[in-house]
Length: 401
Image (tube, rainbow, N blue to C red; front, side, top):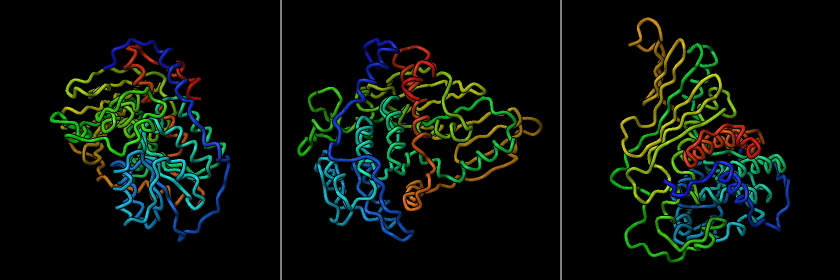
């Protein structure tokens, strides 16, 4: 938990000042590339090739695309990704060198959160379409500037809220809109995992920081000596990310925003702590309550007990839905022990949706505006957690809109 007591306004002011960074001077804006045919192979670059970035490299190759370039501040990461491509990808320490390549049509950004804003804006201004890993932004103002950059450049952008491409969640939206639940008044969602025996992102024993450009990793973040925990477990340090609230809330609150067709919560309150994992600054258990005007959401991500898993209960005036493992809808009146509707989870392909849209120039499932609205709700919860105060949308409106 943070040690300093900051006010809500000082936190927002500090976040806004942190949005400034080096620009990619050689790149122009609004560069529009050719429309590709359905069978044309894309030339893709991947920025940030840790575990998630390497997964994206594998997925792109399975989908038949050409991963021609990868960029990472760590040599060993870049070499691992190059090996996945059979040695074909060029490696870069400075992502801007990747963006200078005229043959690269599109980029995937899977770097730490505090780099998303600068790399994203440089990418769209270089004329690249972008798959931006979630969480979209490190601060609310950064998200606003990323939205403005897409409007300015006209690029095709997919934010990595991948549940948006899952058919089983699309059916939930259909049921809500059909009136199956009556009025949805309360939604309780969680993402629970048991990391009590150790953080899987913790550094390996006796790790030597050879071949890592630590200054480039830090970027605009405060300058500190190399720390293997900050490098490997950056998600749990405020300087680089928003912890489990933004990392997991991008999915669960993303579902709420999509299915309930809302943009911004009216307010957020949150509490919790780092109860179990000592090197975390961000909490390993956090509870957020968000008011959306006509309904309330309780979101709990936690890393100490995995019993509830990735699940939720959606409470309507006429029916209730549980989502652990599968979707079951129970009547609110009459026999509530037998579901009236039930269906299994069916995953989609969020990356393929983006690639199809790069070719067709249609908008993908998770647009930049949607990604920004969802992560703003997560940022509001984090601001409440860090200040100990209720945060309203009016408090952050100038940062967001």
